[in-house]
Amino acid sequence: MVAAVGSYLDAKAHGGNWAVRIDDLDPPRIAPGSIDSILGCLQAFGMQWDDEVVHQSARSDAYRTALTKLRNDGLVYACVCSRKEIEDAGSGTVYPGTCRAGIVHERRAHAWRVRTTSAIIGFDDLLRGQIHQDLEHEVGDFVAFRADGIAAYHLACAVDDAAQGITHVVRGADLLDSTPRQIYMQQLLGVPTPAYLHLPVAAHTDGRKLSKQTLAQAVNPDEAATVLGAVLEFLNHAPPDCAHRGSLDALWGWAIDNWRRERLPDLASIAVRDQNVSGEPS
Image (cartoon, rainbow, N blue to C red; front, side, top):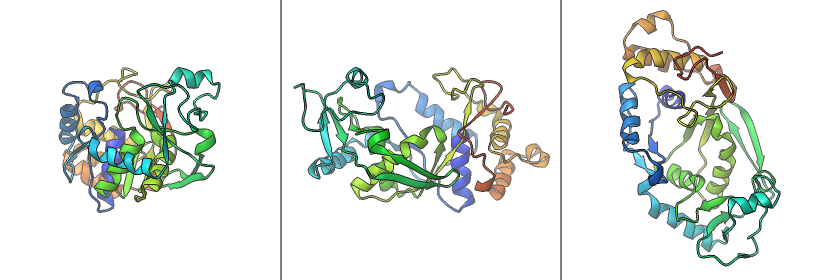
């Protein structure tokens, strides 16, 4: 909800459109009813998207077209390395380039990896300033298409941001490390690079991000005004009492009029006292 509210306000405060995309690249992992629940929750909070909702699960042809371009340009190569083999190579999470010169072990299923270079990828985050990453040494050649035929997140985002004409991406700081890979993918595909703003994520007091995996509670759409007020406080945009006492529309109106990027907390995460973002930041 923090990411949703932050992106919505940043778009509306700057006269832009707010787009919603469902990142359902791996359909078997999508819980039944979860997509309708997410969209229903956004609507209950008064957030209406401006364009048709895009489902990445319906975009496989576009991703394969992008992969074909990368293959034709010699920018990707086949890789059969398993996660265990990469770990056993002793290079940590950085891919050691085992298959760069050709597949070592003949197997039918293979992924497609992007060839990285020594060039440093940098961008100016609208909240956190200059960010730089040495992809070759900090990440290594990364996967563009998985061995099971599903596009990797970085390729899908690059393709979809370009197709939707996205100019600004506002999301959680947990994805900050992924941004240089997406920018590199954009460069390889010859598509524009949006501006990025990475908001702090709500975390448990032990530092783990609030999520399904950490058993965080879902926000309650029936308490939309209360939760929205708490999210605004989390983002250092605490509304006055008069806005709190008004309608949900009035609260949104105040938030849009008073949204300022320079007021946002320049932090990767902020701990909250309980499992719901309606708790006070600690």
